[in-house]
Length: 132
Image (cartoon, rainbow, N blue to C red):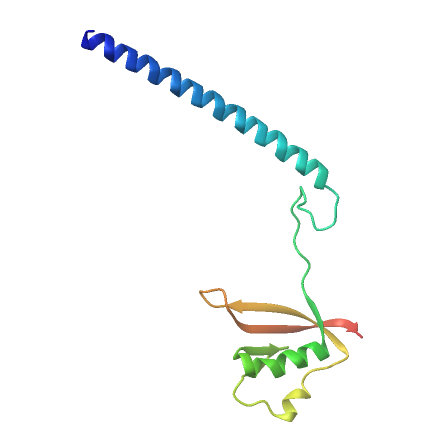
């Protein structure tokens, strides 16, 4: 058999394998798309499911007693807590510092993180007009 004929057979077989692989891949992608559409339709409206629309998450709200607890834990874990502009560093927290927190008020919280994503500072801001 001549070399040209062998090359032509090899090229033909390669083309058939490529077209077959492309056709199988296309069919698998269609099946995956249909499956994802069916799962999305089945899960829509359930609690704790992925929703179609995007919305902002609500801010976290803590009571004054929860803020006091986080203040006591801040020394142990080594983070800085700020409450309404007053900074409580973890070095030494005095009894008079605790009086700066209104336990009847609700607080929203913000986080400052380092480059690794670890929380280094908690910022509590009192919500006006809210109390327990």
